[in-house]
Length: 75
Image (cartoon, rainbow, N blue to C red):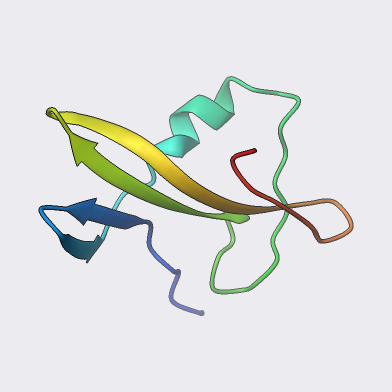
């Protein structure tokens, strides 16, 4: 089994790998958003980059894949 790429966290001018996937709970409520596996290292179909600011967690970057390997981002 391939190890999964972690989400990235930017905090206090440092980068960390996260051991959780905070976007999953939101995506579970969105039946119209279905990311597909683009790599065996990322079965969730997306890579997120997060930042803590004012004690809140923000998604600041996203690279995700839709059916047909179409790459999408936050825009």
